[in-house]
Length: 370
Image (cartoon, rainbow, N blue to C red; front, side, top):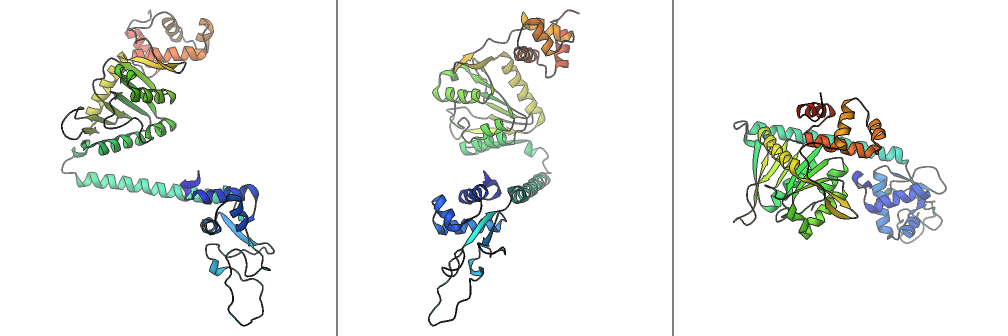
């Protein structure tokens, strides 16, 4: 959990122990964690260097030396000089049996961790600025060919897989995909980037070929996608593999399975080409059948009809008359979520992104009486 602020697993466990159970000596921490004392002292030194812990003697309120520098530890009680060598002090234990051991206490997490997080945020912001500066420098260096970076040929499975991961990690709103079910180049969510994108709110719409339902690896990937609340549809044949992120970046293959040589793909940033690919996706999506789960099994729904009928038409009429979703549900004896799901389906049928567009499309297509 705290690796993001530079803590090792052991350091995090020690800090959590001190926060939870209060001050403790290195020996107590070693026994409770089952970790060798040498490793404990190293971890405590790193925690102290980051300001997450402080060390004090049992019988004094004055701060002890930094545990990362045992050579500077405060000396124990003075002893008369005598013949023979003096044994060196062990860090955190005192110079002899009469010297008190060091007890380590945790700094308040709200203060100490927030300081580390602020530093990390600043570092990330600087990295973002550096990335923007490098992008601008790249564009300036290629200014002799203004369209050079609008398309990029990517060759080889490793390079293509890396681009797929980058696209998913960089997506902010929506990711569209046409999937053939043939993972000869990039396995489904092999890097976890897809799962991370869904967790941060990226909406996925995926169309797969019907034959994918019978392929073991493809079926497993579909189960995982449906479990992550991705919207999946099925068609008899997918025209091509395709990934589009936020309507601004697309990746399409240049080769087909079985072609000689390494696989290649085209990374497209040109707005006109990306828009063309988006239109292709939307056309395939409009004719595809929704795929869902019932009793843990994939179920293919009905294909989208040409126009709303029955209950959907009544819902549409009530909406255009000014009724709220709840009022429509009450009048038709349906659940609110059922009404909202049906409205969403009608919007998809009309290719409308807002309800205002739905009303306009409904009148344009003659779905309601004037």
